[in-house]
Length: 461
Ligand code: GDP
Image: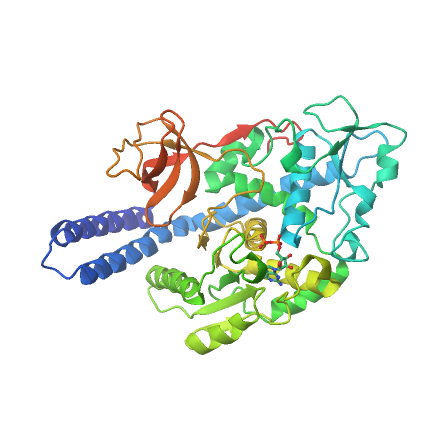
């Protein structure tokens, strides 16, 4: 370890101890104003997070990590590409996916990504039913915006073979995959799994390997055609990416509110944004310029943001906001709007959004491949990161815990917990598989229980 690293570590140790002294003395004292104490502790912790985040760049660590992840992305993209471009379409093992799931853009893309990862897990080429021509988002089909996923047409790929309904490791050369909700047997390669061939490498450089891995498929699907790229380049240029941190806000309202998600006030997004910037101030040792990019389906948000947060530079285009989110009204321009918002989110340094929205999750997914961050550049106002139709997300207890009230559950070291959500207050909710107790437990007492499985198509790096 270098001197920089050791000095940083010592400083971090000292400051954690100081914070502890403060909490020990004032945390339990009735006489002290609780609000003053809480604020003091929060400020100490923000400074600690800033200090600790300096570790990521000490000894050129950041460069090393980013380069390593970007090498891995290239390796995965190349492997996918090879499978998608066989020398003989009529001989390749194939999985046929129906593009047009009846739902929003993010939902449709995630559906195709699910087909894609199942296909990849079995070394199959993915083809789209009707070659992606029947897509409600664009009359001109998938290729109106994206690079085709394969050089084989369905007709060529299926040939004279019978198309069998998907079974795990079916011997049929061509299979057709139903939507994830009607799967009879769950492929072990479904998220949150990631490949054993790259697991050590990935675990070394990324804090959320399953996210990084599934993002590769979204990335491959979303490769822009020349026309779309031209449009995106123009939009990207309007925002000063690469010149200091920009927080991406995705504010999902309209049809989602009250049905699939709760309403969240802009103040709540901005509160977490300001916390992020305070950490950056502590990290950089100076006040960092406040910049946000806003993606939303609610155009009133821009005006509100500019009025209420004058110290912030606000970017984002009211023209991208899709007000016509109702199913029957999708148009090519609403397609362009949502793609642009998702791509711009992926250029941001950090996202504040509701992960219940597939739009925000897609922005976050693309960010992983585009920027190779560590995997924790977000604050979600509701769900933790998930992939629709994923296998159970599990954690393992690394410390014992005894429930302190009826809402909480006990933990023994080694217990497996199915996590339902993080309450972002130090506690998560889940089911202890050993006791079947359901309830809250301290989030710091567990670690992830990774699902590492074989993907024979992916060689080690
Ligand atoms: P979810 O409902 O938020 O999980 O995501 P979906 O993509 O499945 O459906 C939401 C639809 O609303 C999208 O397809 C868009 O048409 C629209 N939408 C939602 N959020 C945004 C946004 O931030 N920007 C734009 N342009 N459109 C959005």
